[in-house]
Image (cartoon, rainbow, N blue to C red):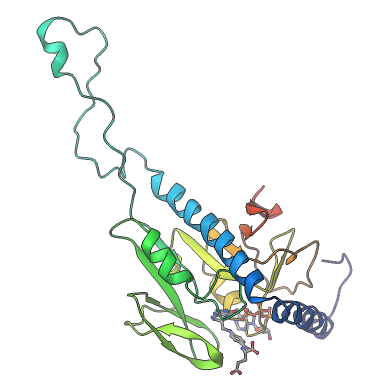
Length: 243
Ligand SMILES: Nc1nc2c(c(=O)[nH]1)N(C=O)[C@@H](CNc1ccc(C(=O)N[C@@H](CCC(=O)O)C(=O)O)cc1)CN2
Ligand SMILES: Nc1ncnc2c1ncn2[C@@H]1O[C@H](COP(=O)(O)OP(=O)(O)OP(=O)(O)O)[C@@H](O)[C@H]1O
């Protein structure tokens, strides 16, 4: 952000200009470029989910072992009764919030399907439902989506409320661009401005095509940073905010 005051109207106009440029660049992507971007982003997101699910601590471990017994110093016939090593790895269930990419958006239109297949048993995948005031409600993805407003596809399962997203371990966020501070440029409805205000920024990851991570985007007072970005060529990278 410039270090002098800029009025809201000037910022909104500057956002509009950058938005138009980025949307035009997305429209110009070929089918092959879109598919290549989606494949790389999905691979990175799936790896990120697997890593998050593998992180357990003693209190949250679902493994029913009881106190660990040290084998050190054991002698004689009891030695073979010692624990047989670490329990097999069991990934922890996660709550992940994502979105249904529209054609040309990063992540590919089958992103929810791919995420659902990658999540450990017992996990939940939440998707946004656009409310009349452009705030976001959330509902669980159970395998189907139906057409919504503005060309969106949305889950048809019961609504969970605008605060349901706060329970998510990871939140994948759509964006037209992100800057080095993590400031996000969206489609202009203010939907994710409101959702991000309910979230721990460290759990938010924006998905971008190459070229959409910019040095700076116009920022207003209500803009909240995301914690990381995924791009096809750069993989997962934290934004400056989390470093
Ligand atoms: N995939 C996806 N879902 C999302 C968002 C998003 O950016 N991407 N949103 C992010 O906040 C919210 C929806 N906000 C939106 C705001 C504007 C347009 C829009 O202008 N769409 C068309 C016009 C379609 C029509 O009018 O029929 C366009 O791109 O031209 C779409 C979604 C919630 N869900
Ligand atoms: N917390 C909020 N409550 C209500 N309106 C908001 C809130 N935050 C932002 N807005 C309004 O939403 C409008 C669009 O904001 P902005 O241009 O930052 O959207 P965006 O982040 O690009 O859009 P989106 O999040 O839908 O992708 C602005 O007029 C802004 O005042």
